[in-house]
Image (cartoon, rainbow, N blue to C red):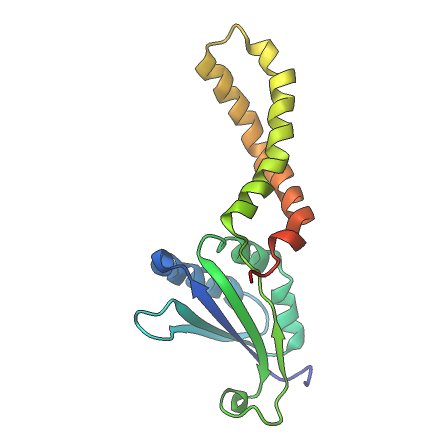
Length: 187
């Protein structure tokens, strides 16, 4: 595959039935993020049929370097992660040349697994693992100092402290450490 040829990425996503409207908005948000990237040439999406849960998303970059910059960008990572509740399975193909859409002879096709959305029970385990020790630590260190406070205010303060810690520190670490297990494809 030439490093300077335009590359079209074809992504097939199975969208959970109750989330088609959100998925549509999610794809539009991704288009807006990609549109600002150097080398972006365009994108679009279609459903297989009006009642289908399978969607085909296409986007094109001028060359492999600009596509790679998009693939590893923080914007794309945030965008992909934000679809965790919407998308169940994915397949990705990179193709060069417009003829690749009609004829596979002579074209290189690379299939790359996309983010796999873990089942809810795995997501729950990924949250539980950091949440339990953090809650226990809070109960042992913070709550004794709040015994004279009304229960609702003590719990509110506890949550106000734990929520940002979980969101910005402990969950990202937990997710990163558990990623191979969380994203293991379903059978």
